[in-house]
Image (cartoon, rainbow, N blue to C red):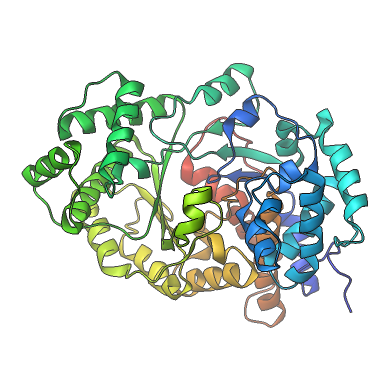
Length: 473
């Protein structure tokens, strides 16, 4: 029987162990998609206790606690931080076989050197030990990034954001680049006229551009796209149910904009046409600047209307959706490719039924202009666990080139989530190691090790082309 979470965790044979310890483990981390708050990085924030770092904003943990019968006041409410932690600790034993069980204990080990199993009995000691460490200067958020060998971080930022904290970080000379990512979902959300026009007011304020027509609206958004580029942005990101690829004319979009700008609700067809137009414009701007565009597809969000009203979005009431992804996605990518405006693109799916669809879709538009131009992105959100990661890598291996994959990201709001990269790397090494030992792959450790290092780091370094990050390793 193997011990729990020892140095060979998830590595099921000697070859996997060698690949991980000699090749993968040492590689720096490029976290090209996350939701870390740049303000906390710029201010080098120190948490006062482990609850603040671990439970504030973590809807993964909240969902588990709710399922375990924990009252909402211990999740998003105003109970004392230590009490919240103890409720989480009492929940952990019931998360067996949920990725939270692995992540929890990995994070306790990697950041705090705590090897105890977290439960109700160990909760007080773990809380005190971790909290005493995390409030010290050595555990400030900038030092947490250094501790995990992070080479670069991309945050997720709305076009109207002034990016003041990214600018502040540059002025400070912080050696780990913290770059913005352009996330224009709010700019194409036309379900509610009042919300859309409130956003339009924010856009006017951020650009000092008066907006009375669709052309004005595009001009203001492109102004923000340019502003992000000047701040070092090289990626966009879209969190969508599905790709929108309706046919439209310019006059139709002008009329649709005028209608919602006047406060009138759009019908479903008008909404789809407007979203389709916006997606194309964003994609063309990305191509023009040489950015990478990312599409996170398939989440069915805010399903619990009562809790959405009470707590707002991103509090743990989302699920996998069953949208039809293929035809519209192909049409959208083909339209860009035909016009020679298809930027480097990463596609992420949330429904595992779409794994093979995505793995084959990328091959339709990989034209040889760059290695892995169109990427099948890492297992995302609900699929960000052992089974989901392995299935994503197997689908990509079977139908594309895993060797050209740009690898893992945290997609997290927590500064303690970087062991997810380690988790992914261990699974990656175990896949290769198992097939080497079974005779399915040649026992060429040097070459396979180089491929693993590419997936862990170098592919992303080359794909995004960022300057100022750790040199090739």
